[in-house]
Image (spheres, rainbow, N blue to C red):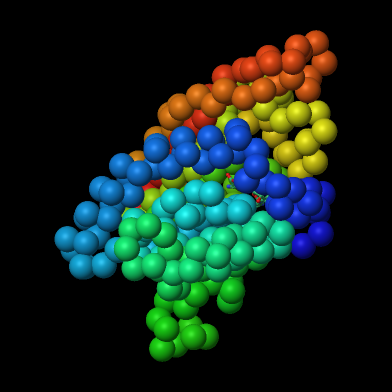
Length: 253
Ligand SMILES: C[S@@+](CC[C@H](N)C(=O)[O-])C[C@H]1O[C@@H](n2cnc3c(N)ncnc32)[C@H](O)[C@@H]1O
């Protein structure tokens, strides 16, 4: 998968987790997401006795994935950059497997290097393990964090997510908001490769989710991430800015 974005993320993967604002962003995303996971899990446990099947697209090194894993039945973690997936695989290997709530269980996290463009992609796990070539797994919940600003065309991206959900399944997609011209400062000028837009315009993504076919669409500011903008011309060392993050939710009818 050769693209400027992939090259950038392959190169950055080894040091990705050393960036404090990346760590803080994943922590804030998990804090915002946790009540949704708890309430969906409770509903599914009551009706089926099973936990949630989750898909994360653009998982990177798994900063969000590995927080979510102990709360769900399984999480398939996709990223098109092999460097990111290799870093996630190494973390899973080093953590071993556990059956308490402290980390991933055997087979609970499924890292896959792939750009998902088809809900029936053969790299996804099968819906029925006894029919390995059959229909692919559909998910109760699909996550992405800090990914949508890298996606060239969000309509097919959202259509693929919609087609990858179970009926009643939900998306929980988080990314920084395009709140105006200063949103460009989210990335330092040296890290603009693969950036397709400087944040997500709130009413635009709300309309797009509805047009694509999601129901119960809700887009709101979930939190603000304060990060350094010192690399921008005119800024001083130590200058920071608060970037609002959107939580974009919707359900497959
Ligand atoms: C800013 S990083 C965020 C990684 C991770 N979610 C985190 O918060 O640490 C964006 C990730 O999205 C992946 N990515 C880029 N374009 C993508 C696309 N079109 N679909 C899915 N993932 C993509 C990149 O490879 C990269 O790992």
